Image (cartoon, rainbow, N blue to C red):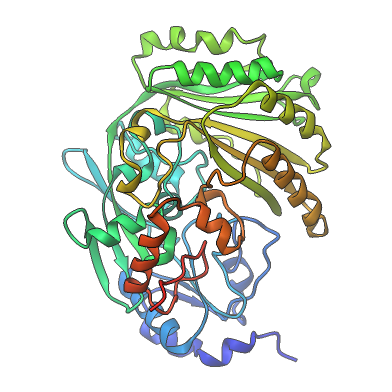
Length: 461
């Protein structure tokens, strides 16, 4: 009996190949099993076809096919969706990974980039010109996904979110049209894609602002984790000039070679620091962090900015997670983290704390679909595991800890959400943002073709 998905009958692989310039991979092709993979290796879905598109015209044709045939449509840039939204069971996948063109303007102030490139590849390429755009904290994410979610990265306090450096975009809409959007052209669509993820079309190209950044003072600082160290790190990050952005991961130290054996299995604060201010002032800026305790590891040094993305580990099979925004981390919250961290049986678990403010907060909440600019802290709780049968256990742990820290009604960041119900997605778009997004969804995608995402349903009527 054939293992071909039921919906495969709606699509002709040979017919699709004749219409497209890119590669069309079906279930009978040798490359199929690799082509259907996403970042989280436990996601095992069998699409009817994976189309490795060559350009926006290919995208438009596939979008039109999906709309007319009723096939479920998945869109993949880097494939990092924790819910596996970058693939489909029986549907058709637009794989953007072959679209990697990068064109830096002569003055070096901006770049047009296709959305199949990863954050690390883009950062390395523009870094050769002494330039950078603030992206996320992981080099393997697709630049399309990180941008459309908002983009909370290593330059957030100095230059804001990734979407704050987005100048224009090329978008294929649900009707198969290729449109250019910016503050001056299709401004409503431009507002929506800055935080509204892929709900409004397939973004094929971005124009991103570039900043003059070559060398920075940055890297990893690992400290013993106590309530005082955790709160002290957050306080120092909040008090620092906006040139310094930090990410603090409170976790049980893994047995990695660069971590002293004496720390293995103990609670640590693994801090990542990026200072884009004057190099000769960096040591003084970082002194309050180093004074918190005797470091297990101190790799904070003068480096080229792209080096901050080096050293990424292997992809996990499954991940449980919960995230929310807050205004502060109280001492009792730090105690709660340290009490509950050892209770998780996941192979890797962490509570990530990102101090916000700075340039992020200088833009009004209603300027983009990302509407959490007035919050001072972002909290992300994650557990990585290997056995799908343990999902309920790990989900319960992350949700319980999040509730203990005050997650309820605190809003969330769609870039880190998994498969969630509408109520959870709704809270990620506070105030009037949700209603405006639903109205724009009705305008640009009334049939909800783009629904494999943290879905914003079209407004009624």
